Image 1 (cartoon, helix red, strand yellow):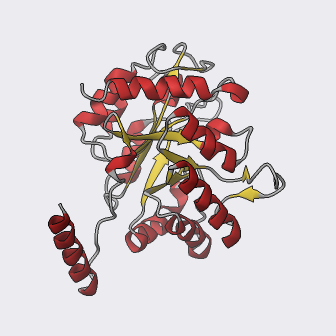
Image 2 (cartoon, helix red, strand yellow):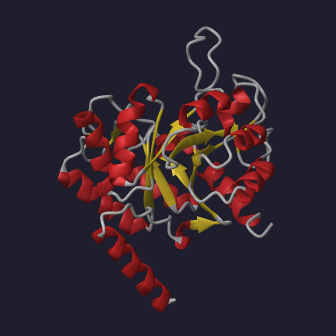
Length: 288
C-alpha cells in the first residue's frame, strides 16, 4: 500500500509539474459508513452553532459534515456567523473542533454563488481552506463562472433541488431532467446534489430521479419522510416512504463516491437520536 501511494504521489507530482489537471482526492475510506461517506448537513442543527453541530454529528455517529452559510459560530460568540466570510481565527477554531471530534468537513451549501468571479472565488477559497470535496448551490446564472473555478480549484459543484413550487413555475430545479440539461455538457465535476426528500415532496420517485442523473450525482441530501406530500416531515431512515434501501442500492450501483448528508428537518431541538438511528440503518445495510 505504501508503495502504491508513493507511486500515485509521484504521478500526481509529475502531472502537476506538466501543468495538467489532477483529479481531486476522494473522500478517505475512514469517513465511510456502510460504504458511503455519511454524516450531517449542519442545517439539521440550525438551532445550534456550527461548533455544536460538529459535536452533535459525532454524537450521532456521523463521520462527515456539510456546512451551510450563516450558521451561528459558537455558544460563546453566537453573534458571529460562520460562512465563506469567516476570519482566519474562526476557520482555525472550526478546524480544531473537527479534529477534536474526528469529523471531516466535505461540503458547503446551499450557497448562492455570484456571477462575478471575485465573489465566487471567495467561496472556492473557503472550500479550499477546508479541503472540501464539493460545494452545493442553485446558482444556474453563474454556471460559466462556476465551471471556470471548478477547473481551477478542482472542487466539485452540485446543483441542489428544493421542492416543486406550484406558485412559481419559473423554479425548475426540482425537476431532474432540468438539472441534467444544466450540467450534461459541462465539466464532469459539475452535477447534482440530489435531495431525495425534496423529490418525494415534489411527487417524484427518488430512485428514478437518481437514474436520470446517473454519472452526475456529486452529493446527496438523504431524508426519509412520513408521507408522500409537500408537507411531509422527516422520520428515521427505514420508517418512512422514501425507500431508503432502494436509494442506497442505486447509489451503490452508480459507484457513488460523494458525500451523503442527513438533513433532518424535524424535532429541531432533539433530533440527534433520530439521526443516530438513521446512521445505524445505513451502517446495518453496508454489506448488502
